[in-house]
Amino acid sequence: MKLKPRLLLLTALIVVGSAGAAFMVARALAEDMIEDWAQRYAIRQVLYQKSHMLQPILREMDLARNLAHAAPILAWAHHPEDPELRREGLRELEAYRQNFHEHSYFLALAGNRHYYMNNADNAFAGHEWRYTLDPDHPNSRWFFELLRQKRDIQVNVEQDMSQETANVWINVLVREGDQVLGVTGTGLNLQNFLHDVVQSDEPGVTSLYIDDQGAIQLHPNRALIDYASITKAATEHKTFFALLESAADQSAVKHALETLRVGERAFITQRVQLGERTHLLGMVALPEIGWYQITLMDLSVMLPLSRFGAMGLVYLVTLLVAMSLLAWSLSRLVLRPLARLNDAMARVLAGQPVPPELVREGSGEMRDVMRHFSHMAGVVLASRRELEEKVRERTAALEHLAQVDPMTGILNRRGMSEHMAAAISRSLLGQGQSLGILWLDVDDFKLINDQHSHAVGDEALKIIAALIRAHLRPHDEVARWGGDEFVAILSWVDAEQLEQVAERIRSAVAAHESLLDAKGQPVQLHLSVGGHILQPGETMATFLHCADQALYRAKAAGRNCYCSA
Image (cartoon, rainbow, N blue to C red):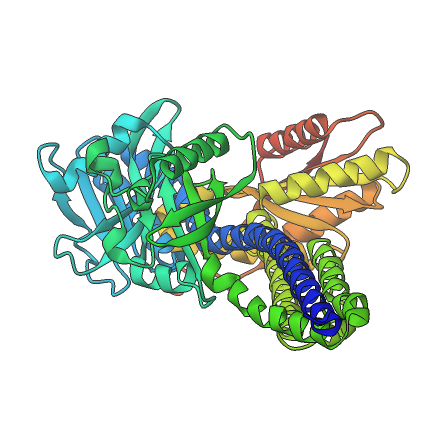
């Protein structure tokens, strides 16, 4: 064979070998970098789904927890046969029903095993007692299991008796100390919950939720859900482990579950095999409800590496044209775009936007990857900002609700305690002038309720709250301290000014005649007021105690008057 064909053959072998080697290196580098991105994306997806899923449940849990601690419910639960306490308890349940998302509630009392409920259609108004729970009846087993477990909050998924609908039930124990008095809560429609929280529009992404036994609580495929988990034996559960192909994957997921349970890690990612497809699994604990969220990413959908085959052809054609162009082509077509992609991933991980010029990097499929990544990064960052804003808004709204008395619209005891502590701190640090407190109590308020009804009593509290607020300055605050008592904090006042304000409020309340009884006659209102000016070295406790003593003196002096400490 002549030298030319030999050289051509040798060159061809070198070109093909170099092209093959370069292609393998580039492919391995791309796979490692993109899988690294997939793991980071999986972590973000898991944490986002966690926040997205918890929002509706936490809201219902907070309401159900407040309902379980409501005074009318506790009083009724202690004396379940008392008709007056029953009426008060049902009124409290109806008020909470209007606030629950599904406008429904249930209450099961341990004392007499009576089960009460009402739904969004108010179908059981006047007939809220549905039946008596039977420990031998399968449909009552959940109640006695919850009493046995004594877990304050339990989230459970159950179908109704017709098997046509299902709900995510939020169960909260009604208890006082160690004594369990019953169970109350509400339900979320499973179909709506799956649509709003679990189902994903992202191709190749599946979210599901399991309990600490691995039983599937929520899944886009309702046939896989383990309904009524709390009443089943361990061998009866439909578990996530049963979906895994290998014993090694089952063992790894169980170990991950235990790791999250003891709090060693915040989240876990690993590869698992479901059927013939490899998935990237992300798992995070939801300690608020005792569940675990699992996000499965189908790698064959999320990382279509077969598209890199075209890159091999580009390499081969380029190297066949000229060996001298190898380094330039490799750098231009692969290494530089991948380096930019890696930098962009780091920016996204740090919460920063990707550079706008990234979409112009590379060519062919690589440019598509850049564009898809840029779009995906924009969606992820926008979703993150939106979620953070919603969390801030919800937190502010809940904080506001927790500090405001719903009847009068002024601060409640908690809100006033925080305001008072801050005001005392500023005053004692020399950042404000003298601080005064007025403790106001409605005289003979029980008599108003007894003679004219609680509705008139409630209206009286609203009127008095409005009159107090009207006679205070914008920077002063008033709160309903409890029952028929109000507390006002005034800054920049001395003892004489404090007494003047108190007298104006007391006189305005005494002169008010717009509150009428059932016969259209004015209901007379009077206030006893105690006042005190904060002294150096006083704590909030002594500040309040002095005002309380002053109020006691006003009561002892015949009521409808003002006394100072």
